[in-house]
Amino acid sequence: MADPSPLTSEEFRRLAEFLYRRTGMVFSEAKRYFVERRIAERMSATSCRSFTDYFAQLRNDERREVEELINAFTINETYFYREDYQLACLTTDLLAARLAAKRGRDAIRIWSAPCSTGEEPYSIAIWLLENWKEVDDYDIEIVGSDIDTDVLEAAAEGIFRKRALMKLSPDLVARYFHPLGDERWQILDDLRQSVRFSRVNLVDTRQTRLQGAFDVIFCRNVLIYFDDESRRIAAENLYENLLPGGFVCLGHTESMSRISPLFEVCRYSGAIVYRKPMELRA
Ligand SMILES: C[S@@+](CC[C@H](N)C(=O)[O-])C[C@H]1O[C@@H](n2cnc3c(N)ncnc32)[C@H](O)[C@@H]1O
Image (tube, rainbow, N blue to C red; front, side, top):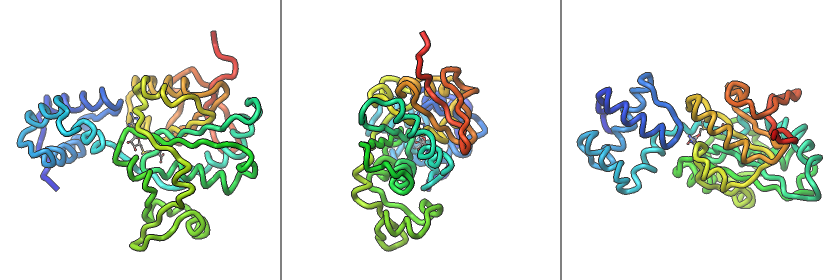
């Protein structure tokens, strides 16, 4: 790996501003070590000798460098059955509430945004198969999206290492994955093909609108990287992407109450989730 090249305060500020405008993520001076390591990698990959050269390439978006830069700066930590109390809440409370609000047999639409390398949307699919007895009675659409195109490629491939599977019982691993050897497992083709993946930036309203309306959105462990303004924009986008009465689940350290007044707080026995009101405000 290339040695981190120290950035001047002005270079750091320009880079952080550039990333913020394109992702909503905030990189403060406290993250300087992380930022310098990542930028050194990108400079080495693009054969740039100085930050000025690199930034010029970036501005011209040579070799899709903006995409590569964003991919290098995302933090993609995830694993199967993470915060599974929300998956339990989905099958004990949220789906029943959604079905009561729906007419006929409309598809149930669930969005994992962001999905990172796919563990979250695949967990939702496995959880439903294991824990929801009505699973065969409804058409269920699960969509995974992320801003990072590398993780989306990995998600579509569906190959995981032991660490990603650590919360799954050996029985679940045996039933939903096939071993590839070398401590890697691939999710079964049926499941792999049941989740649709696409690139969506949560702070880009034009992109989020294209996803249509969902019954439940899992938006977990991304708002922590945003500032108040990006959180507000993301929350308003999620609101627009929910059907009336639809739910948002956030990560356990995140709270919608501090971000946006648009949602109702719903306290179920196992989880706190946020609902778009059934009756929309005038
Ligand atoms: C820590 S992972 C969370 C994955 C999963 N939701 C979970 O809780 O396990 C955060 C993800 O947010 C994505 N991300 C960061 N900024 C984003 C944005 N503006 N729009 C969409 N995804 C974003 C990153 O690429 C990363 O994969």
